[in-house]
Image 1 (tube, rainbow, N blue to C red):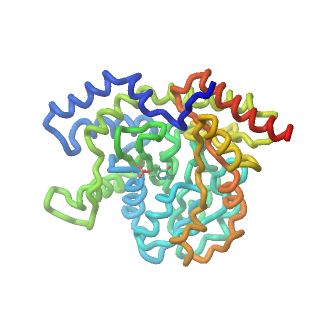
Image 2: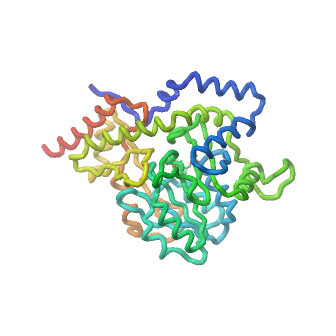
Image 3: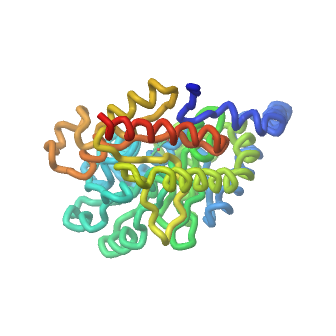
Length: 373
Ligand SMILES: *Cc1c(COP(=O)(O)O)cnc(C)c1O
């Protein structure tokens, strides 16, 4: 019988913690504090502790976490920032918003993370920072990135939006670079019920600047020392996220369990399953596979009630808006190939084994039909 399996079901997670979430909302409403205040401070402390960092600064979303970080580090017109083209647009967008130039480096074909062996030859006098993205929930190769950053005196801004809770050589990501940026967009591993984001750092001066920047560059109120932003984490989101943070490790464990089940059940098929480096904890924000018949497989899944997604159909160096940067087709072959071959299968912590078995059976049917054709 045909089932209907979504890529992610946010409602189901909400139902499982509904009473606690509602209580936390009423706490904020009853408190009379609707901008920043104790609920935001509490979440900031909890996230700092969770990441093993000294400071956390709540902001309006993950994009602003990146934007304010670059701004606070003084990145501006003419500067170059090295990053990956195989990520959500926001990673590069914030560089351009500040008048700086994104310099794209192709990815590693197994992990989809930035290929560190290709970074050094792109470093110039104008290079100010590297933004590694811990893509799909697996940390980038931080040792090599930090080594290069040290050698050339560059800032490292970790785009950890997809990877809260993941670890690199036993250390939680987010606190290894100069700053770590997280998103609480509802579909992320720790998602709110609306937009939200946070920045973590061990640099006290930077933390101070970020707090000033998120409130119109003012401290105290009405005394402006910088041109800033209106980018604060909403206390309603903070209170709900404090509830959800307690469950994050359990949810991430379930994501891994489901991912390993997929790996096992699909291993004999002509697809490439996710590759996890053994010195890292992958938190499987998305379960990404590769197939020669990607588009056909997507249609077949859809016709059988299984949703899937493409992350990302156009690598950033080939986006229309970046045509003037001059990257030709073929200039980043690994990213270009990945954008044509990858798809995400349904994965979320509340997915049942039965639902996953159904997805597996549909994927298997597709390839069995192909063989018999
Ligand atoms: C989600 C995401 C962002 C942006 O976060 P928002 O909260 O949606 O602004 C940035 N980078 C990556 C890699 C993301 O996945």
